[in-house]
Image 1 (cartoon, one colour):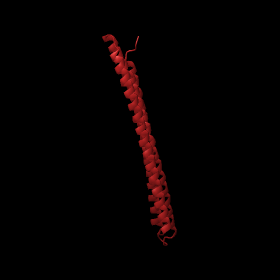
Image 2 (cartoon, one colour):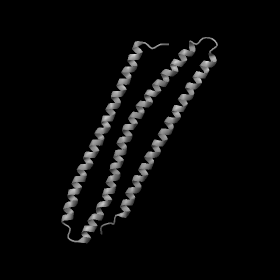
Image 3 (cartoon, rainbow, N blue to C red):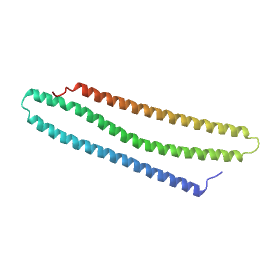
Image 4 (tube, rainbow, N blue to C red):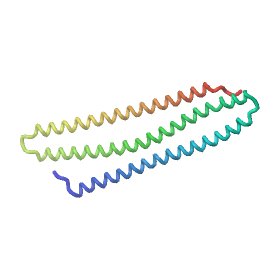
Length: 182
């Protein structure tokens, strides 16, 4: 079985569409990242100006110490929030790439399986054993790929759970370490 010019052109067209789609998703991820950084920078600048004004209006050392101590809890919470947004952007963009790769892989597996089936139908008499071995190898490869996909999904889920646990622990630690204003 040989590929026709139309089949080759269709495959190239589909690959180019996928490439442009993924490029678009990558740019969307970069746009979200830039927006997050601009927002965080603007907020940090405003908070620095407010804190500076507050420091300049302090009347004694105890008030200065309380002001400085009160700075750390919101900073830790904002850092955890920023990290969470960053993780969400990265995992969302990565998810789009993963989905595209899985789709293309499924299409390639289907095409290869079809090619093997067509070759098996047109195989000369007496080659049944070779065809069976080929089909078994294709099936084993498909099963191995599915196992890898499941393992990657489990690892990603575990990493996200660990990230959430660390962020929550850090925020809780910042809350308990910061003395409350009386």
